[in-house]
Length: 152
Image 1 (spheres, rainbow, N blue to C red):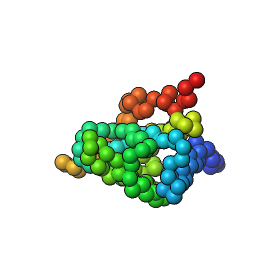
Image 2 (tube, helix red, strand yellow):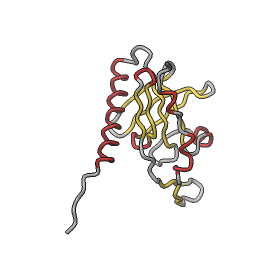
Image 3 (cartoon, rainbow, N blue to C red):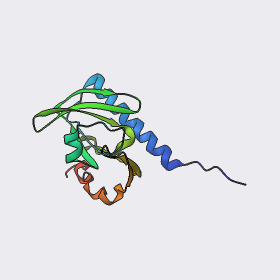
């Protein structure tokens, strides 16, 4: 006899992603209030992530963006959000699935959410071969969550 177990860890992760979705949708409607700003770390090598080849080359596995003063055209959909940011003075459109997010932090509210790092398949454009990328080795490169703690 097999027992189906409730996977609370995955349910909590999904609920936290929904919190982030709602926060960003609220920003679309009302703008950022007060000193709120967000650090969002995400995997760049997930197939659904859409960033320029220049950014993909610069950040082959993960990157952190900051939504604070200079971002445009934030749009929130059920599975992803998109935003325009400037990198070295060049505007770039990023499409970021919620499933690719590693960490979300609002230092003003002392809120942080971190997510399990999935093993993902990376498709290369040159030969369309698949390789498994072990992101766990690179977790140290994710934003320091000390940035999310209020200075005392």
